[in-house]
Image 1 (cartoon, rainbow, N blue to C red):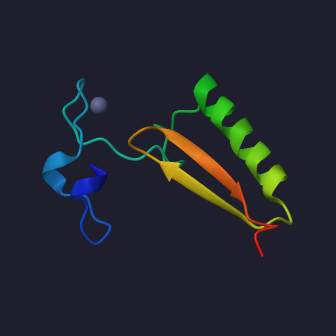
Image 2 (image 1 turned 90 degrees about the vertical axis):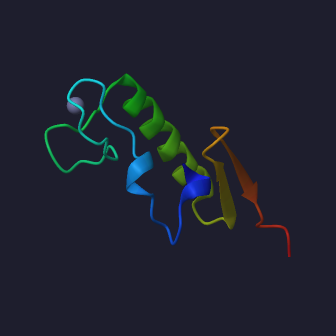
Length: 80
Ligand SMILES: [Zn+2]
């Protein structure tokens, strides 16, 4: 999907469709009653909090590979 984006927009025809109701899928954001806040959400929220704690007052770069689903935190505080 990422490689098909153009000007930060995703072509409508490749947006995933819900297998239950057939409507287009949406990003899981807290805008309505459909927001999913399950065990995995709490697990990822905890990891994000740990990243924020780690990076406080540091010069860090967060590199995220959405296709391979991993991230790298580079601490560049001492790179100068
Ligand atoms: Zn649905």
